[in-house]
Image: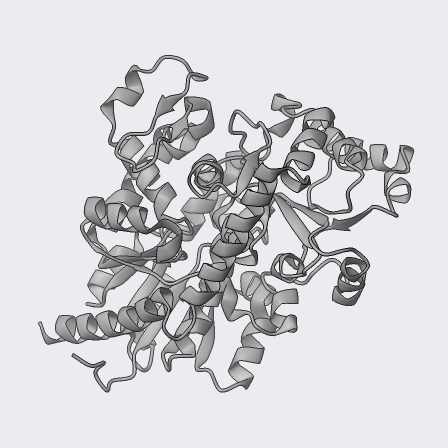
Length: 491
């Protein structure tokens, strides 16, 4: 059956955190390129972070509009103007942030009521479970966006439903994750709040998300079939609902300007960054970036810096969150001057996709957030894994054990942002130097790892081409939603 002639209108509602918003903006552009009318719902502050990219998309004729909501920071007990998860001074305010997002429901309902043309569906983040009820009220399908891959979604699903987990007393003992196609071992320390919510309030939110997903029409995933085919099928089986893999969505950023401004304004001039990269040989530079929320203790930052320096290999290190003690260390040690012939430090936001796509990049030290993991895979580079929290240890296992395109740094336990100093140092400078050499050295195993990474990068690009699986799934998503919307309206 062909796509009905009605022009679909998708409402996209990203969670206010960079790792959740960035891929949703890419999805908005991919759908708009297919003729779908798009409305992105967010707050004024968050809209400003991707304004230039959307403005350029609109200039090319894409039908995208951005609707601003008032974010009730003060009403929820947050600091004034705190509209993004990365602005929280402490994880202790996380529950209040979720409370603030729940308070958006009346505004969202009023917006949908007045929207013309009427929406065909809502694609909303998993962190907005209440949008399932909103979609039901307006008789339109809700599609859930997780910001994770199918491997990790299946890992977490199986663990949350595995009664034996509670019988494991040790937090450090490794156990095999049940129901997977590969032998994957994790410890309770590495799962943390991803499986065991921190308290009853977080457990209640987790339960609400689960119930809302069960009632939703389907799940859209930023991944591609050739990357994790068995796990896409496995997830479909356990969720028993439609799942569309439509990634890597970062590949919609074809222009240099879109890559440079993806997510936020870069803290370094793109020309300075590219000129520095141009000065190095092919596959010689290590890119170090630990995400928008991840932070390290002062002692661990020092060890990482010393490990990078002692590796004698060129590096770009993105330093987003610095304690006063670490700032003092940088000055006292004259670190940036000391390594200026070897390394470049970017203080703040970095144009990650632009950097990863440069031919001089040979490896990526990453926190294993799904966006970063997939961007590394898409760029065809090998990775050093440094997971922090959420599902990142699952992503590490995919990279290291399933895809075999990365090496572990040695991180053994989760740490929530804001609590890093309690943990101190997990990986020494000598171990950092050693793992860099293992990944970037000339040994046969390293060569094979690089070969696999390059092949995966090619598969990622093919998935988004005309005959690719993700391209087909995007068409299927539009068709399925349009038909479902017509069906619901007829009831």
